[in-house]
Image 1 (spheres, rainbow, N blue to C red):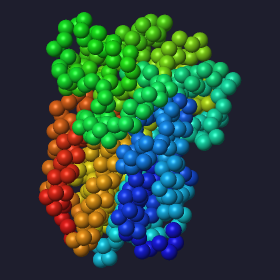
Image 2 (cartoon, rainbow, N blue to C red; image 1 turned 120 degrees about the vertical axis):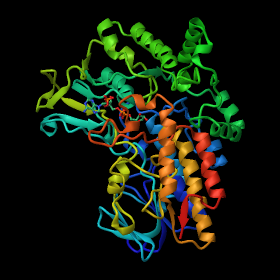
Image 3 (cartoon, rainbow, N blue to C red; image 1 turned 60 degrees about the horizontal axis):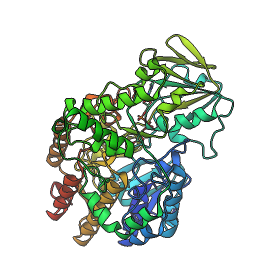
Image 4 (cartoon, rainbow, N blue to C red; image 1 turned 90 degrees about the horizontal axis):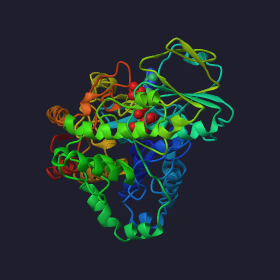
Length: 532
Ligand code: NA7
């Protein structure tokens, strides 16, 4: 990066957000550089190479919409794309739009300091370089800072250890091995059936059982693909009107669960279960607002677990007792069936908590489980981890860590007081992880690119959220969450998976009204921002 001190914008991260941000900014004439810690593009899909990693938004919708040529030429092969295919897509986009020449790989941004006199950010990297730019865009992802719990003796284990979010590109051979997997979130639920089929023995350490819905993945029917491609712009436009930015082709039943009797409800759930995917949660409009409604869906899933898992004790252990959808729901391919295998053991790590890790394996509930490999499927320091992993200092030298010590505070999830000219893509306080991420990314990238164009046209050097706008926004995000059942469980949306993390509901619920608000803010001359 040496010699690039004349930059307008530094973008941190070359995942889907960073790639599109670069494309838009370069197109608008801004001198831009992307800095990426990994050795390639793709972000989440570069790092999460664990067996079974797959997107749970359908591939025809989990893809960029900004270029009609791109969406017409790219051929997805499955209803839900697997990690290797999505990574190929990210690479194709990088090549097609000639993005690599402005990306510095194998370089982690370590710090960013705002120089108030110069009105520029000075960015430093772990390779010892420093570079300045007028703007910094954090495209660091919501689920990119791996959570490796600090189990006693963790580093004493003499076998192999892996984290699902940092999987070795060359893959792992589990054949003949005794494998332990800690966690039963989305990553584990995707990986467990595949590891179980390969390993000699698989021990699953489950702290909280999770709801999972069959994905019913399948090869894409060419006729279906033709149909979508013929009306792609309409599909994209319709998805923008959906609560979570996808799924406009399936029926969302806009009535409460109580409007059907028990038999009709059962039939509705069964049809959606058969269809597969998140359609299940579109069965009624109050599943995340009414406990009573939620319980009807939750009990339907528990019954399916009991139907599937032969050992009744194991089945009960796998049945979640919290609100369905409160934690990120999972999609699977044969997850519950895996517990019928003779080589799979489920350990109740809630009752028999993991006490420590030894050179031989994991001790839980007083018993030592001897293992050759441990897979940490323990998730991420979500939404704030990657942002706070960079030493960001704004006006007056204030540290982002300090500004957010009671939880993240932003205006629109895009900007935070005290940090002028710093933008967050899909930051806390925006719909982000509660939507189709690519839709949320495109909306943020377009807003930021338009904002920089407007600032430049008007000769403005800085933009910063006002304290009042930020306070009002944080109150709004909390008020919306408070109307739902989301705050009722120990989810990573609330930061509850990380010991000591402030507990604040981080994403904003509801994409379409949010996107309208962002448009309105811009149309009103960047209302809620101070322009310098
Ligand atoms: P998740 O969904 O955060 O799952 C992590 C799992 O690891 C979850 O079951 C946790 O149990 C478990 N965990 C975490 N720490 C511990 C400790 N200390 N002891 C025992 N068990 C632990 O991460 P994923 O990678 O599966 O999925 C992340 C997102 O990626 C997903 O939501 C999709 O958006 C894609 P807990 O539930 O906290 O009791």
